[in-house]
Image (tube, rainbow, N blue to C red; front, side, top):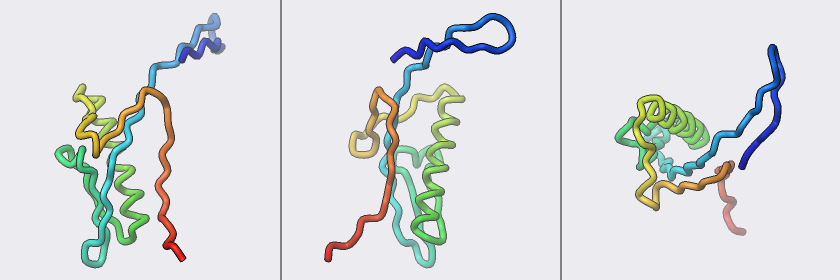
Length: 107
């Protein structure tokens, strides 16, 4: 997709072209660990993709932040972002938003 909008600031207007996007969806595991919750991303564990939280929600929030930081570091270092195994990483050539919510127990 091409965003051919014009930007204006100081100087002449310039053509703005959108960069291609790719979306990576990583499987994470959040599980109880004593009096806290442990969270890890199997595809990114070798890069430090693990954390914890006092609550399940806190551990999930922390692992989202860790995954984002690990991906940014991999990009900065020129290391390819893992795109396998398929059960741990889903890759799409378009922008997407992913939301994780707790499931309600069936009545």
